[in-house]
Amino acid sequence: MATRTATPKSKTTEVRIEQYRVRFDRRAQAALCAQIAGACRLVWNILLADCERRYRLARAYGQWTDFPPEDRPDLSTSFFTLGKRFTDLRSRPDAAWVRAFLGSPWGRRYRDMDLSWLRDLPYAPVRYTLKYLADAYTRFHAVWDVAATQGKTLGVRKSDGKPKGFPKYKKKFDKDDGFTIPDNVRMDGDRLHIPKVGWVRLEGSGVYRGHKPKQVRIRKEGTEEHPKWYAYVFHEVPVDRLKPPAWTGAVGVDRNVGQATDSDGEVYEVPDDPKLDANIKRKQRQADKARARSKANGQPMSNRGRRICGQLKKRQRKQKRRRENAAHQHSRKLADTAHTVVIEDLNTKAMTRSAKGTVTEPGKNVKQKAGLNRGILKSNWGRTERMLDYKAGQVLKVPPAYTSQTCAACGHVDKANRRTQAHFRCTACGHTANADRNAAQNILARGLALCPTARGTGAAARREALGPCPLPVATVKSTSTTREQGMPSRPRGSPPWYTGI
Ligand SMILES: [Zn+2]
Image (spheres, rainbow, N blue to C red):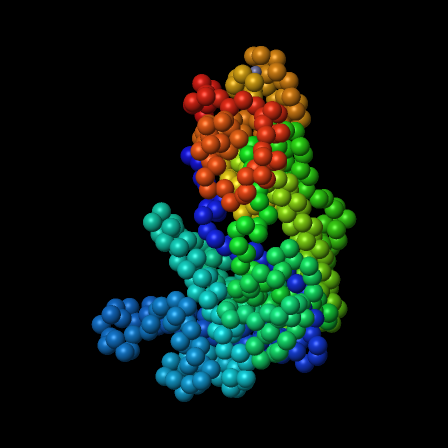
């Protein structure tokens, strides 16, 4: 069945995120930002510990519904409840639950801490970190419920012995160090107002710069010695100012490890840098060693270890930037090529599952599978897919079975059709093609069979689709037809070879 994941275009505005580098006027501003980020981390950790304490109490009481309501621990993990507790922590440190928490084993490490400095920091950004905690709990409860209905357990996380998917405590120098200005964002030209910090300058040229800012995430990136601050501004952009997708046409994409091919034969390559990969691997090993050493002798990490962690972070950031850039370019190119993009419904999680097996039943080809998994993850198709969701006019997902063994010309399915990785030759009709392109054409045909009203697949379909398009008619004419000639003709109704897949 078709999954339409692209956002409906009936909304008047959409949110686009732009990244800017933050430039401070005074050094104290950077220090204050670091303090706010630190407060977010502290508040997250305290309230997560408190949630755990409440849960443990409830479990220890057993039939705790027998207790009077005021003695029962409140197990809610909603943003509303957590926000109220944050207000207590900040302004009423003598509240009953705060005293109970600090007196319990979960609050021991915070007992002698002076929390009055929270009052000097902006209220809304620090409180908003609990929105993320509430969301993390919601996600955890969702997977927990799914596992419970299937009669399974979630399994234990190696690092801390908690169930998999449970919210994690935040560490200093974590990769997501920062805070969010949730609303009432004040921007003036290239300047942004951070509460209690003051005005800072934003550097960078976003396409959607100048549109109304809804929310800002301030993040500390870079290394420990040389932090770089970035602002991710959520702009509210009117629909008619968005970069529009192609007006008509449909294209199928076959995604492989390291590259994708579309039904026109265009190849989209994922950047590959073995030197950088090897470097990251080496730094990772060194960092692991340094961490193990500091743990063994109970000392904080050595200066050298911290430097290596910084170098590792820097290289990982570089790798991430390159992959993200490729994903942006690929999705933009596809969205510019055709209105409807048809892709296979791939389950990356199932595909990248380890082949390790169990002790009694060891898996086969564990090492090869591990390498393939790395390749699949590196190819970043999930990210490209999410980008297509908002860039393309329509995204269709089709079942992936046998797309590489089916002949795009006659529909004959045979394993022998695909002689080599690259070459396809039909054993029934003799049709030859590039194997990936053949698969992409099959994907396209399946998508069009599922969605006969896809734009650019027939005059009637186009008339039908003309209604909701926000584009002026002149643009429609200039971009519409050229691609249709090169497209395979749409099978009328359900093609005979489509059934039974
Ligand atoms: Zn054939």
